[in-house]
Image 1 (cartoon, rainbow, N blue to C red):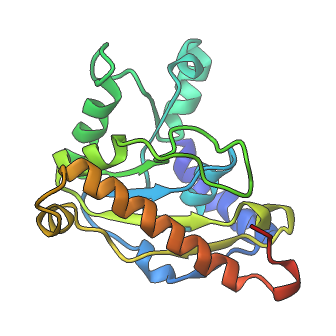
Image 2: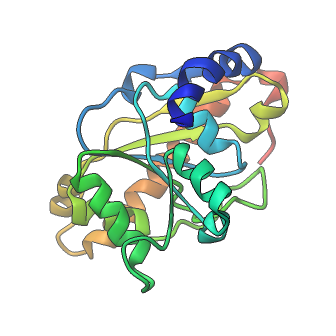
Length: 208
């Protein structure tokens, strides 16, 4: 499988080229079903997350990427699945993600649903990630990658503490669980962003 070939052969070159600096790297370790949740500014985000994470991660991608036989085989060998698998309705991708987690896999997701058009701001978060985590009852490992650090060829990453969906649900009885968990995700990624920016040399900090 190309995914594991990349983990073994290509990932070391990624580390040499971008020299990732990872805060709380041990937080990336996991066993059993888990959701890796990351901000999304570049097509390379999935590559970076796969490279720095010690275990294999399943991702979803647009169905159009899988239309041709060769492309279908290529992307599937990279641990990617078409978002439409699991049913033809709008909930198809959600059902497929839950099925993967129920099978014990690690699942990677970008809660913005698409790449953010601005490097200075994260886009609005969709509720799909929270819904999946609640339905599958799996912990969330939040990750923030500094988009500007790609340009400096010194990738800055920080990993947050695990988020327990049930704990969030119980701590906000007056709020819908999916809304409460989405709010926690938004707040956590915002905090991780601040931590990443604190890692950048003072003269290179971005202006907000």
